Image 1: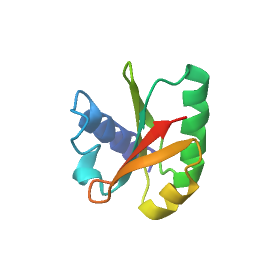
Image 2: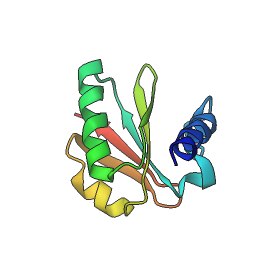
Image 3: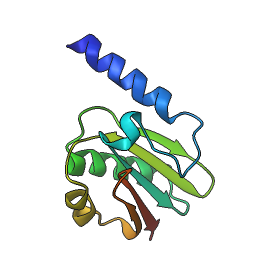
Length: 110
């Protein structure tokens, strides 16, 4: 079971490296992940707090993967939780866009 979890994390990581922002965020076109894109700059401490909060909100089935850029942060979390339940609990910014098919939520930082 442990080896299967490690392999799954490797596959998810491989699926999210060097991908454009508008592409699916993991294996199976995002059906098993939730991707949160935070628009706007945030500090490292804030980013860590948000990732911890999102892992609790999504009831993560593994470690979150975080990709930062100058003006945005992309957080991919393995989770099967309903997307609307995740959106309802986001309190660290304003949800500006939702792609229900690819399970991508865009949030403007405060």
